[in-house]
Image 1 (cartoon, helix red, strand yellow):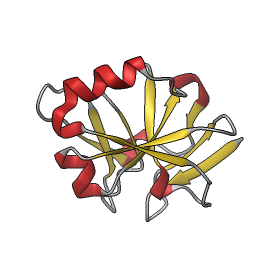
Image 2: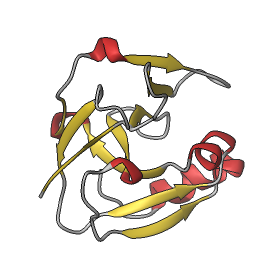
Image 3: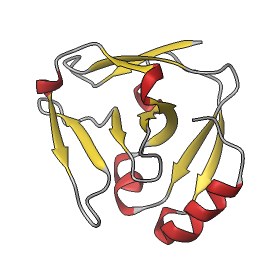
Length: 126
């Protein structure tokens, strides 16, 4: 199915192809908890940025592996490059244009290495 979404002001817009049945990850790390990010992990090939990438600003912390992208105008993080899935984008389900019925699974980002190992052992879309 095709989903679309973006930031609050509309300067960042995207669309993606996702399977009908996918799981969201609800991470409890410091940045995901603070921004209310619900992760839908999508391979790079299935994502398309519809607006100019110049509308985005970047923030990196910790290892610097994740590239947290925010709208430079309204500050909303509608998608970013996660360190857990270097070949995928993580889309914020709270930024989708329409509500999509998806299953939400917890991800213990406060204990990232253990959570990533558990994630790698599980079956996930993306």
